Length: 170
Image 1: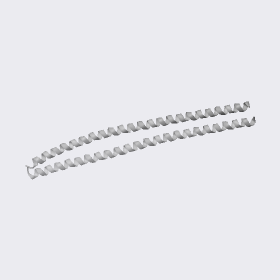
Image 2: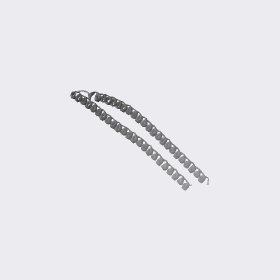
Image 3: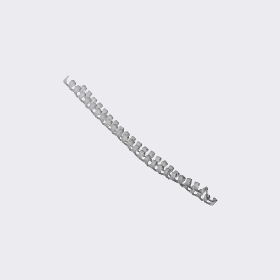
Image 4: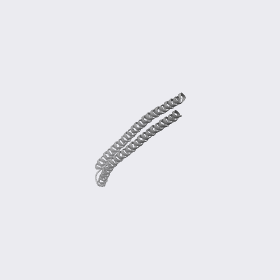
């Protein structure tokens, strides 16, 4: 009877230890999950800040382009007013000047479009890489915890078998 009580006590202690180990593993998993979530949030914030900076930079650049374009338009308007009083030759020169301005604007607009597309691609690639990295880290953590849980279950089964053997022997 003492041996049975002793076996029960040992079994209860082993179960409590196994539960404590399981709780510790769950706590560790929760901490890691929380840390991963914090890292993802930080990454989101950094990406958002970076995108905002880029947006502000491009808005300034666009504003500068608009100012330049407006100045060129004002120059063109002034030239048009002056050209109403000059010869056909001067009108042809003004048209040539307008064409050059238009070509420059088109070049600048095309370059801006290329830069924006490149920025979109770089941002998309960076976000995809960060996502893949975090998913791999989470997968590795889950794999480790599954292995630990399996080991704990096997240890519990061994202890239960030992206790069963002890009971059978007694």
